[in-house]
Image 1 (tube, one colour):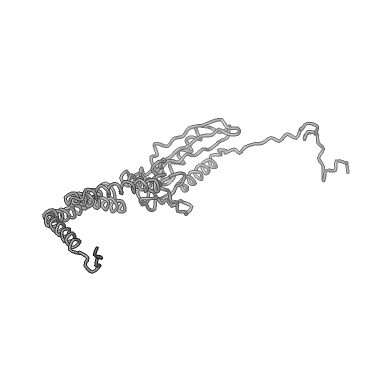
Image 2 (cartoon, rainbow, N blue to C red):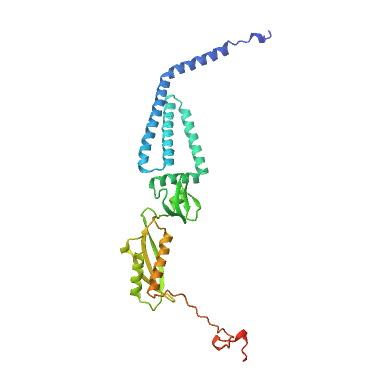
Length: 309
């Protein structure tokens, strides 16, 4: 039996296998050259198509909304979706089907995980897009949302910013804006003020009505003067109460507080000139408590001393 010599190792077989493998790869590469050329042409075509559709989308979007942030975001999403679609088609042409399947599965799992992790952010994002198209308000409008009233200063895909009349900025999530009532005081260009006033039981009701309506009509800034509503409301404890409702341009030269204050002063001035009384509540105090002494029976004197001097 002869001992094997380690210097006489046969390396021809591994070399042959490597060479054969390289030759098979080279043949596959040569066979794929037409597909690769087609893939390159398709990639360039999808790049041009994505740019063209992005420009077309921007033109259409500008006709329905002036929200630049939403426009940029949506156009970018459309651009990359078209590029992604092109890549999937190119991978299929290159017969990389398994890679396409694995990539789609990975995107699905990732999307599901991100959906659970960022559901509030996603909800605000989608709400921001819907608000951009519906446009219930624009920058500069006076609105009331979630109890906060003020001027809309800016919006983005996450929040709507309202500056209140007290000087604070309120950041309201777009999801809350979309799911709650929005009062827009600007869109119609006018606003109504309702005032409740009381007069004494001894005054002439017809005369009061005439005086109040005339006083409101003479206030600068009042509009729709034929639509002023005057109505007696109730018999109060010490007065007959009425409502006066009138309109003014809003927003305009005068604020809500100015127009309300001017009306109160005009009504008070008209009542003073015509001797109309605005009564105040009357309270009767009864000291006749059980076990005590009635006020009418008490003898009052200086320092509580009831003796004669």
